[in-house]
Structure formats: C-alpha cells, structure tokens
Amino acid sequence: MKAFKTKFVLLTGFFFILLFCYTAISKMFDFENFQVQLAQSPLTNAYSISISYTVILVELIIVCLLCVPRLRLIGLHASFTLMSLFTIYIYIILNYSDNIPCSCGGVLEKLGWSEHLIFNLVCAAIALIAIVISTENKRKILLAVMPAEMIIPSVLLTMTFYPVIKQNQDSFVRKIIDPFTSELKMIDLEKSNHYFAGNYNDTIFLADSKTPLLLRTVDPKFDKIKTDKIRLDDYSLKFRSVRINVLYPYFSLSDGKVPVIFEGELPSMDANKTAVRNLYFSKLSPTGQHQYVFRAFVTETKKSELGVLNTVENRYTLKPKVIKSDVDGIFDVDGNLWVDMENRRILYTYLYRNEIVSADFDLDNLEMFNTIDSFSRSDIKVKELSNGQTKMMRSPQEINVRQTVFAGRLYNISKIRGKDESFRDFRKSIVIDIYDLKKKKYLYSYKLKNEDRSSVKGILRTKKYFYVLSSERITRYAFK
Image (cartoon, rainbow, N blue to C red):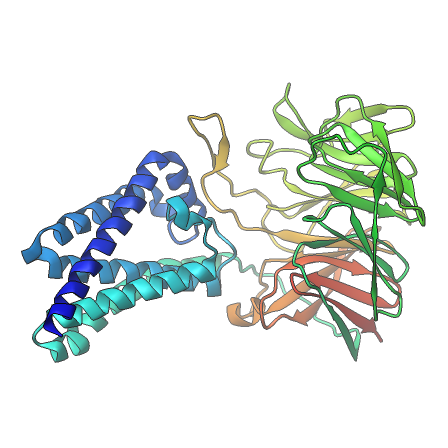
C-alpha cells in the first residue's frame, strides 16, 4: 500500500509537470493571442498584461518545485491552489457571464466551458489526494490548509468580478407587460445550428449552418417540420459559411466570401447562380426579387459600409454614410441588418451601442434613434497583431443582441438591466424591448423565462404568435 501511495504521488507530480509545461509553452508560442484572450474576459481585462506574464511564470515555478523531491509537496499545494483558481474562474464565467474566449492555450483551448470545468475539478481532486497521501497530519490539511487554498482564490475572483456585474445596469425603467396566453408550444430540435431563414405568415423557414443546403419548413399548426434540399446549378464553388434568406416566395443562398448568389422561387427547390461582380459581403438581406441590401468591408477605406444590390442588372451601390464608426470602423459598427417590408425601410442595429439607423430601400432619407439605455459609445479597444490580424483587446458590453421587425415595430433582445432589475433574475430571462419605428420611441417590454439560460439564436413575430429559437428548441408564444 505504501508503495502504491508513493507511486501515485510521483505520477501526480509528473502529470502536473507535463500539464504546466505544455500550457506554459503553448502560451509563450502564441503570447500575443493569449494576451488578447485575457483582455477579452471581463474578469481579467484590467490586468491582462500582468496576468499574462504571471500565469506563465507561476506555471514554470510549479514545474521546478515538482521536479525537486523535497519541494514536491509545496509544488502539489501550489498546483491545487492554481487549479482551484482556474475552476472558480470558469464557474463564474459559466454562471455570471457571457461566452468568453478561453485563455488556456494548446489543445485545452478546444474544450468547451463545461468540459473545462470538469477537467479542472478532476485535476484539483488528484492534487488534493496526492497532498493528503504525502502529509502525516491529514486532519490539519483537511481542516486548515485546503479551505484556505480554495477560499483565497474565491475571494480574489469575487472581488474582481463584482464590479463587472454592475456594468450592464442602467438607470432607465422598463414597462413590463405580459401579452401572452397560457398556451405554449415547443418543438425540440436535434441540432443546435438552426437560424430563422424567413417566414410566410405562420409558416416558418429554418436553415442549418452545418447542413447549408437543407431548408426546413415548420407547419402553421406547429406540429411537424418538413425538410427539403436545395438544388444548385453549380456545386463547384468553395463555400465556407452559407446562409439562406427567404422573402416568400423567393429565396436566396449565399456566402459573402464568394461573389455569387443562388436564387430560386418556392415551392421549387432549384436555385440558379447569379454573379455579383466581385462583391464580397458579411451580411445580406433581401428587399424584393433580385433586390438586396448588404454590408461589406471596403479595403480602400478599411471600414464596413452598407450598399444595395440588383442581381438582374449585376449592379451594386455603396452608401458610405449610413453606418458610422466611433472607434475603428470594423468592430464598432458590428450589428444586424433588418428589412421592414410594410414601411419599406431598412434598419441597422449596432451591437455595441444604443443607436439604430433607418433608411429607405435606396439607403437614403436616413433617420436615427436610440434604444432606452445610455450606452451611446462602443467600449472597444483593438490591437493589430504581428501576423496582421486585428483583435479586440477587451470584451465590450453587448447592447442589442437579436431583433425582428413586424408591423412597424422593432423587437429587440437587450443585454442591459434597467433600474431595480436583479442580476440573477435578468440572466434567467429573455428581455425583449419593443419600439415604434414611425414614432421612434420605446413602448414596453416582454420578459420570457429562460431558466436553463439557453442561447437565443433568433426571434420572430407574426400576427398571432411570437417565436423564440434557441439551441435546443423553437418555442411559440400565443398573443392574447
């Protein structure tokens, strides 16, 4: 038994030597990206430079301690404390924050947040067992040393994160109404890659980013889904990120990295190729048959701009003054593009600030208004890496996340808490603010329960129903 315990402690030491050597070296080889990842986390943003050096240094010091037999126990204690710190960090990220890029380095970067939490818990448990085995006074270890090595990281991270909780709260007051009946219907989805491609009244069209040629139709009775496959007249193009748009009965299939749009007319699933004269775009929305509005990155100005496209005439026009930059012209103008068919208006909602731009179908007659929060500037800091990539140096507060337009009203999922709205309640709800597009003013809000904190992929409003598409299901709420 004693031989087994000795061997277990030795193997545990070797395991942490390999682990910390690997992660430290991975961070050093991709040091710029590691610093950017730390800067994007709300917990480490303010200290990203110092933390990037400290973490690598601590991991290498622990490796040295574990390599010396008489210092191995100190190394195991240090390993346990560091793994406790990482575990508590991930727990806070999972429960109190949005998805933030991982900063572990190497193959561990491929793990999801939940898998990371399990991995860290197992590592901390292994270190704890090895410490107990190596210590004569086990009672002292369990009652005094171990709690201290877990409490200190907890206190440090809690003190760091508390101000972050306050960041997404503002002084406005929401008018919450409940317009829905008790009728609630759900359809479970096998995959989590769906998005709303469009609708025709209460016939809903879903597309899948992983199987891009499949178009799924949800019956108006909301009890079954039909799947059809789009047939292209050219399969030779190397698409990377295909998106389907349905403006019934017309549909289009495109990838902005390839200057081609496939167009068809339902119920036929045939789609024919239309070249768009070297146009590369990041967002595209149809405004009519062969008519589109798009967002593109212009290399001459190094900024994103909106434009209109006619595929019959193979002609597009850029409108450089529609969306405006307040930081870099790339990240700060990120947002969503929507079409109000009833009023023939194009809407652009900024992701990181409270501004909404409205224009006619030629992107003229601009109008602007704001959401109810006070976040009027994008809190963005960017850095150009040595490999030429530009990345954000902090994770900015998202303001307007998902939207839909119906009957002259904008329905907007907001990430900003109003006055007296608790953090715990807010993060388990989907808060939707409704705006009158003609009067350009806030009307009221819906609050939908989201206890499992499912990621919302999209929302859709029709005359009778409100639809919410999440990773696992599509839910239909009936209006009173």
